[in-house]
Length: 438
Image (tube, rainbow, N blue to C red; front, side, top):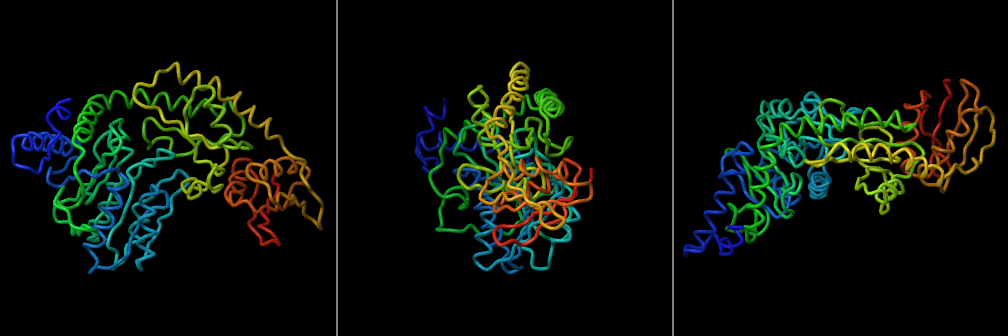
């Protein structure tokens, strides 16, 4: 309220109202720096977390251009990081994507293997936005520091829960992720890191973030982070118990479900699972009608019909994906009602989708399922309906031109104990070969 009443003036001016605005801005910066664990003069405010990522990556790469133009990112980074990597590559730079395991985590050794003499920057999220898996930031930072390479950490998902450990060099975050106002991002550049801001020069925010500061939103962001942090330890324990309940009970209540992400090293309030034979967007609409606002990393999005890059990198089931985020203050009764509603919602979607009669014919020693022109989860449904007709040791070839089949059929085999033989070229699309083991 003080920032609305007294912070309307330009904090860069020397008149009385400008000085008042500057005091509010400096106080917010100091509070943010304390929460992050950095110096106040290392932190600048940006117009969003995405803008902080773009500015941080571009500035660090430009500052170390004499070293080289090699950038390292993990395969599960936020799209803002991957888009920056794409732009860097289009401009002549090189990019290495570090693979993750089935939980969505990288290893410090994989980053060590990716480092080169011309590596200018490495990027790693503190925790994944889709599945909640925490990353070994401190270990990766140690590897990068030993090689003389700065590490940029995207801390958007975790900063509300605590500081990011490790000797990182740059950090970005977004206020709306911890419940603050949208339109406020953070960019931290440690002293000693070579950094060259890109774009036209600007006098504000140390030249690293152009434009007039949104002072009321910045002050609100600092106040909200302080308030969230004050209850973070206690709330983390409570929310972790609720998400543990979801992780344990969803597979009991709903058949053919895979809970994804690390069971232990994860954010307190995120749990993600995927349901076989379910269209993710349809399931989300059903849950929305029941009063639950959840998200999806489904392979079948309404706009692109492509798999989530995070689920794809993990090699897990993408169809029927549901991401549940429990904000601070979520009550036990809401979780219990969600667990009551979910089985019926999944069953209803499966019934609506049905399982179209598989167009199967026997060719030589293999059963062929023609799912060309059909979108997920239909190819997997048709595979499941005919696998019982295949003798143990026999194979079935699923013909599909849906990109998601490349991810979902191997994931189905993993879940159902069948052998995924591999992908073969076909006249249209691809043929996915599965061997029945039991």
